[in-house]
Length: 184
Image (cartoon, rainbow, N blue to C red; front, side):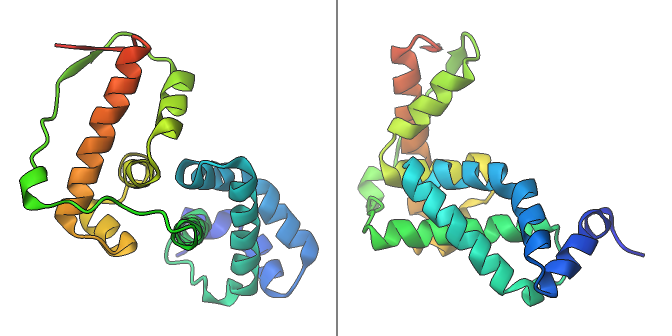
């Protein structure tokens, strides 16, 4: 018995495997918006995110035979785009802050959300330093745990946790300035 995600786009996927450009364009239309969003959260530069997204789709189309249907096509494609985005940042030599045990203790302030202004939150995330933004995005938005993040980025688990806490606190500070959050 096939699962739902295998049935939804399986015909288009099979056509892509056969080299159909029309099917590739159909898949592109289905996934380009969420895939671009993932790129933007990690790369934070529209033109560069667009380029990385295009590379990810090309990579996916060239390697369709590796998609085994064990996860949904969207998750498989998202993994490709995250890897491409992180490779792009590595090429730019984005450095993740090295954390020593002495600096690892970061208070996790409790704050109260005054109002939800998603645009202000998105803008504040974009203002974070690259290393903070990447870890925060991978953890909160993409759903990776710290062990996975540490493997993906080649950093320690404690470094991932600390970068996440620092990113969260920096984000709160940015949002406090916009009066979206207040300290308890």
